[in-house]
Image (cartoon, rainbow, N blue to C red):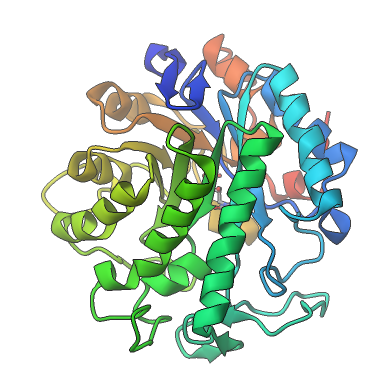
Length: 368
Ligand SMILES: Cc1cc2nc3c(=O)[nH]c(=O)nc-3n(C[C@H](O)[C@H](O)[C@H](O)COP(=O)(O)O)c2cc1C
């Protein structure tokens, strides 16, 4: 297996990576009252010691009363939360990796299984987290303005704390994605509209504010997904032209890298070509892209939540696409939960030592 293309450096603005492997953002819910503990710092540092190029943090929520449905999801605001993140980024840098927080507002959510609720009602474009499921309020103009500012403050804090970049979570049916999707954005004002490009206004305004706060030279990543957890077959953009209309305004507003979330990276996005989502986004926008989804594993991540185990699988198809120039970076999720040394093992061709993934990897944070 010739893995050279994964181990080339990558530079874009503030991001200078020693290789192309990114740790995918993964919620762990190990930060009581929103504060990342020393174990959280240890967990990330171990992946950095294992030679991951860029670590994307688990989703970490911005300063809105209803930005989270889980008391153990970390905050990216307040002294305690930010001090916790300072320890995390220091440890990761000491171990030679780069890091970006994934800043997040969950939008309208199902209640947490524990019964915990935020101190204000869930909020979204039209009070809906998924089609027909109203469990929150429709945001007013002032809610929207305040949320945009909160994203900007979080990005400014990320830069101040020494992070190398910021990722905005615009995927998987959460707040930004609730604006993108016509099924959850039923607004008739400027924040809604019949086209995906019109419904992207919220994301564009968030991006502009974030860009204003961090300046021109700080790399910004936006995570997007066509699929929704409530509808795997969904396509927000039904053609390359719709991708262009959706994402070019976001690139103009300041996004440098699109992180294109798929469940299986090898699945073609449109008929007539084998290009995947990241491949199309790179082709159409000319921007850098990250691919993700079952790299090095046989089964995909949502089935993993339901208890399905996965075995290690070959990287040949990934490398074929990477060598063809389809995408710039590759994010890896579950393999790095099971094994902090995954990247080293790939580099050293120790394929017989690779581990599979079982749900047990979710129950502990720092495993040996
Ligand atoms: C435990 C777990 C938590 C996740 N949490 C997040 C998250 O906070 N933000 C996000 O964008 N994606 C999240 N994801 C999705 C991953 O970033 C990634 O896209 C997915 O696991 C597919 O990659 P993989 O097949 O390499 O695991 C999560 C996945 C897992 C397994």
